[in-house]
Length: 287
Image 1 (tube, helix red, strand yellow):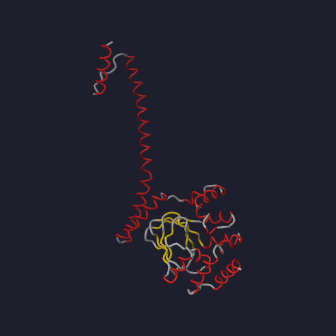
Image 2 (tube, rainbow, N blue to C red):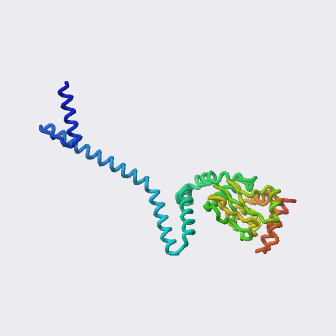
Image 3 (cartoon, helix red, strand yellow):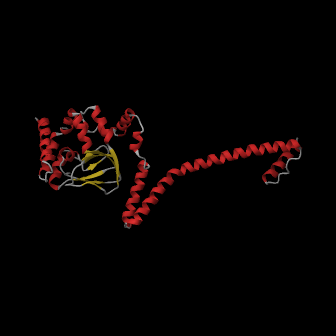
């Protein structure tokens, strides 16, 4: 018994130090040959799987690095200053962290219409239950959710500026923004409960979109943030198709609408038709 044990230990040590005495009989040769073929196949399969695993782990990093290298080349050709280059790189890093540069719209287009509606309502669910959409029809919400786009803003970016033509409204989906009121409006707006710091689910730019006048406030990204954007054209189509919901949207808070219109009235009006249409909506709601 001990002889077999020591013999096995001896041959095991020979295998470890690569000093295998080798097979001697025909049976040993055949067994060793078959074992070598089987082990070679197992090794090849194992290394292939490990290689694929490592490659898939680095695929996302390689894709990001490729985009970053392309951006570096573009900025070098344009001769941008270092500070601006760093902001572009910071933006790329933030977008990569938030969305991995995935095209959400392309993903939605591959789905059935009913599944797309369900996913869009889920993505923008918290925006759809905000006070701006109180009392509107479900199909109105679906139509609005279909047209919403998401943008990313870096800390310090100006999203809208006072006096800028209003073409869209924004919903904060991540991060915070800072709203700056004009000095003569700050007290009145604070009494209305309008926030200076805009957090998730808050919105701004609605008055400029409804009245088609200029923005009355300046909003700046307080930190890196994501915003859901609703264009004037898309909101108008939904309001035209669902007039009952349109009245709910136009009259969600008559006092704030009126005060915003008065603030806008001193600006240069781009179209008298827009003002008359607004006053018509407001009078129907108020009286």
